[in-house]
Image (cartoon, rainbow, N blue to C red):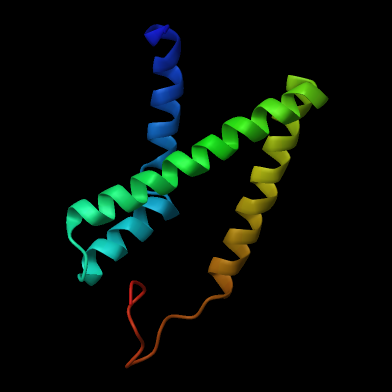
Length: 105
């Protein structure tokens, strides 16, 4: 195994995951109680491993069908579209009124 080649992958994924929706959801599950930190950690970790496995399998399949430059450009366009959609949704949302449930409830 080439650990030096794996380091940029680890770093990129680790930094991309910090503060994203997955981490916020994990934080909310932990705050709710009912499950211990270990159970939340194991369940969230298993979900991330499965999602990563699906990403690797999809990447391999799509990599056989398309050129890497096309995939990079397509991924960039998809990220821009999603970013604009999330921004639009966020700007439309109103602040919760009195008596509203907190976001993690």
